[in-house]
Image 1 (cartoon, protein in one colour):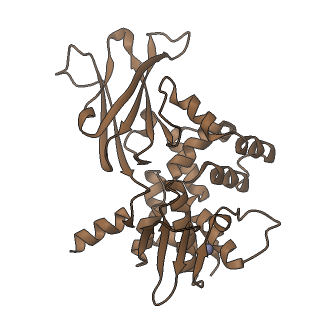
Image 2 (tube, rainbow, N blue to C red; image 1 turned 60 degrees about the vertical axis):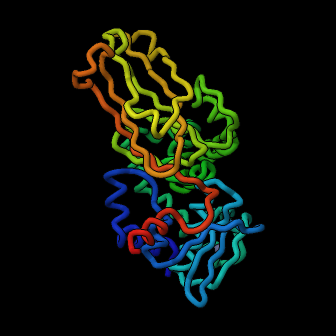
Image 3 (cartoon, rainbow, N blue to C red; image 1 turned 90 degrees about the vertical axis):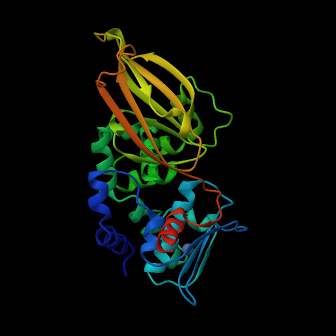
Length: 328
Ligand SMILES: [Zn+2]
C-alpha cells in the first residue's frame, strides 16, 4: 500500500481527523498502535531508537535512551508504518529515523523511506497544521517566526526540525526561510519564551499558552515548563488567580509585562512560569476577578488540560497500561 494513503486511511478509520479538526492537538501514535493491536514496549536500546518485529506477531520497541517525547513519537509512527505497510522486521537507528523523506537525492532502503513518509503524513498532515493555525489565529506569514514554528511543533508533538521540513514540503515557507528557521537554535527560542524565568537547564520544552488555548489538552513532558500569558485588566483591579496550584504544579516565576504603550484601560500581560509536579492528567484553572470580591463570578476563565508524561519510563506505553488495567 502507498505510505501516504495508509496514513490518511488511519486518520479516517479512527476518527482522528474529525476529532483534531474540532479540538487541535497531536495524533496519538501510541493509542493508534494499541488500536491496531500492536504491542509497544519502552526499553533502553543500545544504538537504536526503535525496532519493528513482524514475527511471530507484530510488535514495536521504543528506546528510553533518547528521552525526548517527540523523538519517541516519530519513532513509534515510523514503526507503525512498517506494521501497516506489512514490512519486514527493522532495527532503526538515528540515521534511519532522522533521514528526511523529502530529500530528492535520497537513495537507499525503500522500506525505510516509506516508513518515514508514513510517519510524516500521520503526525503532520496539512489539515492538522491548518487546524492549529485557526485555533491560534496564526497566518502563513507567522511561520517566518521561529517561536511560532516551535509552538506548532510542540502542539503536534513533533520535533522543531521535522516541523520546518514539513512546512517547506507544504510550501508554507520558502527555501530561504526554511534555511533560516533550521539554523535557529531551539535554545535561543526557549530563552525568548522563558521571560524572567531562568531554568536549571534548557533540556525541557517551553509551552507558550494563552487564552487561545482554553479547553485544549497539552501533552507535555515532566521536564517541560508552561509559560502562561494572560491579559489582565489591572487598572480595574482584576487579577488572574491559579486555582489549584499546590496539588499539581509549582509556580516558579510570576511577573507582569506592559501589553502595549498606547493601550487604554491599563491592560497588561500577566505571565506565569509553571512546572508540573507529577505525571498523569492535570487540570489547571485560571480565573480573573477582583481579589476583594472572591465570591463574584470571574470575568474570565481559562482551563487547560495537561497530560504530563515521562519519556524515560520503561515498560508499556501509558495508553496500553491504562487499557490493560481497564480490561483486568
Ligand atoms: Zn525502519
